[in-house]
Length: 633
Picture 1 (cartoon, rainbow, N blue to C red):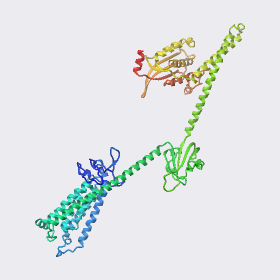
Picture 2 (cartoon, rainbow, N blue to C red; picture 1 turned 180 degrees about the horizontal axis):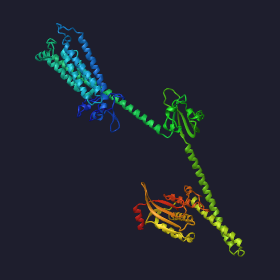
Picture 3 (cartoon, rainbow, N blue to C red; picture 1 turned 120 degrees about the vertical axis):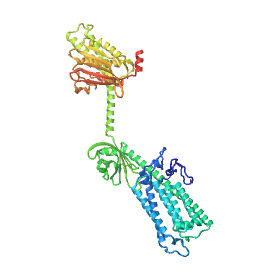
């Protein structure tokens, strides 16, 4: 695992001994101890893996939460060790012995050093409380280590020099720096400890310097005899080696602890992310999930289950599942060999609504306490079953429609024969001229067969729609051609109707010419029949453009000035077999609606009683290039 510390993100492996290069010492000094709650801060790198952040990447609050516990611990240990030194000093005699015992000398200087450490430690703790969230923690650490080195120097000078039993305080300073600042900081402190210990050795081996220090620093001249230079150098070398060895060992252990903490934190983060993902999935799936304990009480329900039951989780936790679904006990007894149940039942949910639920019940695996928990998965299929029933009914209606179309087609053939026979009987080819009564009856037969034939034709057009043969056409020209044909039809020949065509051209759409003409025929015929006894009857056909936020349309409107359509009939006007005219088939507008839908268009009705009616067809607009191409052709 890599411990990325500092700007360069240099790997710090267990066996690495190199010092990472960085623009700032502080960037490599930030330590992140293990643990999730208050002492570990991790960030995500570009590859999505967790790593130790740089100093610039964390807030002052996070820095305080990382370093304050360590600073507090090191401060308390420092106070404890200094207190031990003071206690040892108090146990020594106040007089100078003839042999010049080092531990019996300069007690006042030791007390002074201890007071400095106590005051500094109290100041450290006050700063931690007073300036919580400040980014000055690194400076505070170096101040502590500096005072530790000065204390170690003074204590060593007053208790035997290079042979002092308290020279290990230099090593403690190195260990403290390894805990707080890791390898780079510990190596710097090891160098400083070597320098400070070298000062002690230099004073020992130079009588003039020793006399001056003894006079000014309250060190008795007989504190220790001038040691041989060789012995002093050996002590200095051994201590220097020890300082650096301790620095490497302590920093290695500290970094291993940090790496283990980061690994643990990454694993915790992964587990938490997976837990959040699982909770999100369980809460989002459109299937009810219930966990039932062996006693039958509910221990978990997801959002879908709560929504189906119409309740909240606190209201059902610990309650028997039978309170929610009384009918569930009937299917829980029918288990397979694996203990699972799959069934569909009509359940009364919460004693209120009857719903059709599809249940799957299975033992909950993965529990380590030996409990007999169950996982209940259910889905409300009431709407699905209703939709399936509607689809089945629709398929049956389609089959009936096909059968009816076949029957209508078969009826059409004898209708032609009946009409032909009536025409022959009406003529004088068989038995002379018919009587007036016979002539009247023959006219009824011919009229009714024609009407029935028309109805069958419209029914077949609706029941057996042909797919449109789409092509690029000019809508304006198609309307003009259709009106010209309509005017020649006997049904409109005697009607005094004013047709107006309003529009601009060319107007390009994709449509089937034959079906478009059929639409116009039915709509104009519907308007003509609605005019009735209206004075100055008028039918206006207008073409326009309509643009919305999402699409553009070409509109074809057929407007009449008749009595209009009642509001109560407008919603069902396009349904088959709905006719507002006596004797109408009720299929004309239904055929129009079917053709419009097959063209991917829309049809709307605008009508107010007494103000006429407007049928508006919205065709998808073509691009400008397609219109120009059609116009040029």
